[in-house]
Amino acid sequence: MIRILKKNNFVKSVSILSSGVFFAQILMVFTIPLLTRLYTPLDYEKLTIFVGITLILSGLSTGRFEVAIPKKNELSEVVNLIHLSLSLNILFSILYLTLYIILSLFFDLEKYWILIPICSFFIGLYNIFYYWALYREKFSDISKTRVSQVITSNLISILFGFLGVGIGLLVGHIVNFATGFFRLSKDYLLNFHKYENKINLKKTFYDNSNYIKFATPEYIFQNISYYLPLIYLTTLAPLVVGYIFLLTKIINIPLNLVGRSISNIFYLKTKDKNDYFKYFIKNYIFGFILSSSLIGFMCVVIYYFNTFIFGENWSGINDILWLMLPIGVGQFLTSTYSTIFYNLNKEKILMFISMFGFFFRISPFIFFKESIVNMFLIFNGIFYVLFSILIFFLVYHWKSITNR
Image 1 (cartoon, one colour):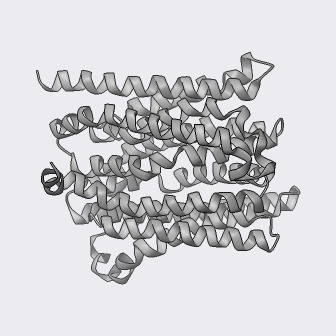
Image 2 (cartoon, rainbow, N blue to C red):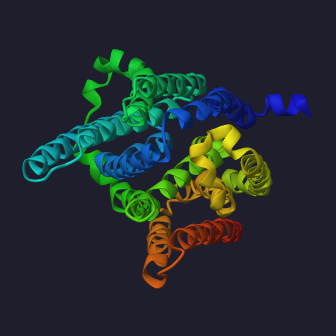
Image 3 (cartoon, rainbow, N blue to C red):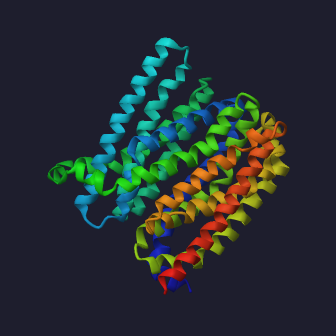
């Protein structure tokens, strides 16, 4: 059995990609107790707003054209997608910075908001060259990069925390993506002269217009569905928002540890529909068992050792702990296996699902006046469960059509 696994290129690729993530997640687990003693839930509430805004802006910045990079067979197509994504990212980042400067002349904005366009810029750069590394199957480089990202970002956050600088978490978040960009782009930037004569941005834009029409709205709806309500909740229960953000980071450990690696290798290796169906059906149930077991175990540990792990400031985290369990499992399954929509050119369906998810997840704020936080988390859990089930049945349906 071990010999078979060693010979299996899919398993080998996932193992290499996950190895760095494993060490990165271990480092993160050990730094969390220190960070939660240096920073309060209100600091994490500020980080929630920052992350939400920068994720939404970064999706607009690149038009999500970078997602198409691993699907291309010709290097010239890949190079054009990279340059198109870079051009859009630079243009939108300048626009965001200009907008901040203009708004600051008329409104008393938070000073740390100047970091938003900077962070969005680096997120865009990191995503572009992450997919470039994935296209070239540089799994070892990606693995090492993830370790570097966790080390540098956490060191910066810890250092700023000891110095009493309140924006340490925000700066650490920027450093995370900046480190990833510099490591993954080095080879491309050093060999830039080889790709200059392959650029045709206008044709690339029109040939891949589905990504800006469907993938970009899907990405934006997916993020505003979660972060927009949280940003609103900062006006009602800022401490709870800090709890939610920290718990989200923890319950996503299985997703970061193995889920994203499986997802990326699926996307890269299974361009043939029959291959994807085969891998999907064999691994989906395994993914459910793995995620529910790991996240359930983590919830039990947190429930009994809450203040010992995080400190006294975080004692209220148990009030919402079990509501996060279905969200964590659902996020694992949907994030890991929803790449099938891109493989089968079903981006439009994914966009409509994200749009439905947006309206469904903000509905508690319309129909409920009490227990808004709990209802928001319950509706999120219901959405992810429904989305997970829908993915499985859609794949089964598409497989039946393909086999006819």
